[in-house]
Image (cartoon, rainbow over all chains, first blue to last red; front, side):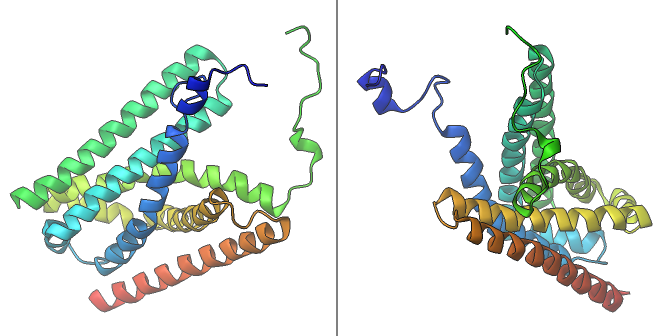
Length: 126
Length: 132
């Protein structure tokens, strides 16, 4: 016999009220990163030894810029979800955990944002 | 918390490391390493947006001895995390959870990640030779 209410069970959100959201987004970003990573590595290989002009040329094309922005967003989203779990697993002091999570998420957001804006600057401004 | 001296489990020191357990913690370690590695990715993109001088500085670091060591380590970390991540996605879908299959897929990940790293660097070095 379960003591949970029928409504609570059908919502499936658990005590943290977010259900499997964290787990699920970690997996969907992982799935997106499989083709994006392969695309990125092969693209970077074609830019090996080429200078600034070639790199900018490549980033300026609409498809490269689109995939690059997707790669950056998926990477940093996946990264901060993963690092969050690691901090929650190993940091047991509540204050240190809270501060660590805030700093990590903040840094991840700033790094992702500056990378996306750099791609957009190249793609839109030339 | 009545007692702080209760035995804890899992007690890592008394277990012999296994392929599966070593690969599990390696997935985390490579994840953290790749997180640090994003700094290089961001530097490269920001430098490309900033201009040729900034780009040459970034490219100069990546092409240095230390840059090559870091890039090689990150290439392996990336392929390991990618291949083992696919292994994890199969597990999440409910496939390959038998112990024997977990070992087979584990060795496949080790071999694939090493092979992909070698192929990538071989291709890169050939490309570098051709461009200079």
